[in-house]
Image (cartoon, rainbow, N blue to C red; front, top):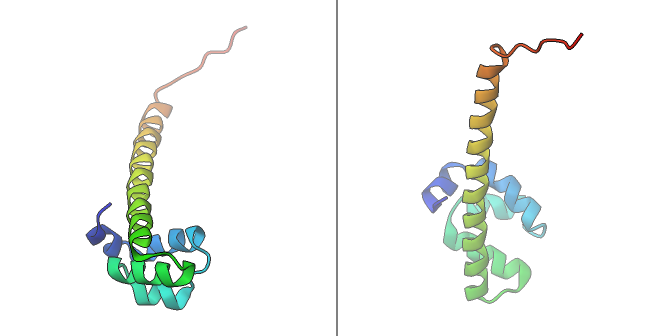
Length: 95
């Protein structure tokens, strides 16, 4: 996921941010609003991280979001396939 996508999907991403970093509150999330620089600044303030470490953690977090979305896409594809096949498969009883 890139930062344009993070900004577009910020309401969804906020929930993951709150689960990942509990010290970031609602006011912080509103201030960040999907902006990388704001996110790094808030993370470094709340956790006393040096700026370079906060940048690494934020980038790793966004990379993790990309992996999750790929998993969801694969699972969505599988669910759609199973729905298509469900009506076509008939199981005969063994008597």
